[in-house]
Length: 194
Image (cartoon, rainbow, N blue to C red; front, side):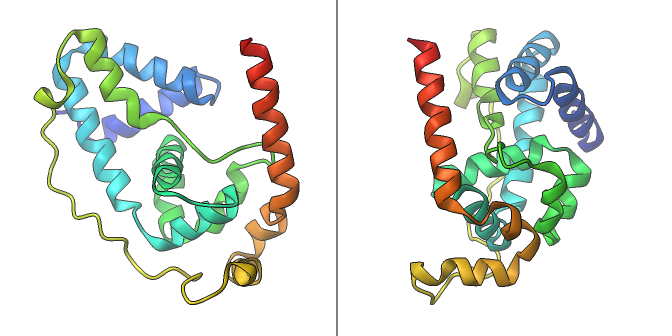
């Protein structure tokens, strides 16, 4: 079985080889796992989902909300994928102190990731059915802790986030400005695809 150290080494190698870009990182991991075989896909999936579950906590949900100006279930899953893609040190430190993420983001970054598709895509390339080969441990999906936003009106969220995450809020707290930036990025992306 792939060890925890091997999982994180693979994440680091993929991040470096991809130039720290999400989709090339996924492609690198898929190709690497396919080259090793089905057992590697199973092991990767096991570790990935274990770390994703461990990061299912409100301090990170609130951080995701602040960084992305909202946080849905899917958005939080993507955020945790991005967090795992940062590597073991950042991941572990952010579990307790999300403000350390300030050193790993720019205002142009959107904290989301696609690592959750790695096992699915690797299975497709190997010609095996994804659910048939995956044996995940049972994970209880109860968010750890309590949201700092609980009990507040949405109009009060900025003040609460600013109080709890002053460093991140100073850089990422202006959702109106960031929404304009992301809208223009999506529009440019769609124009390039046309």
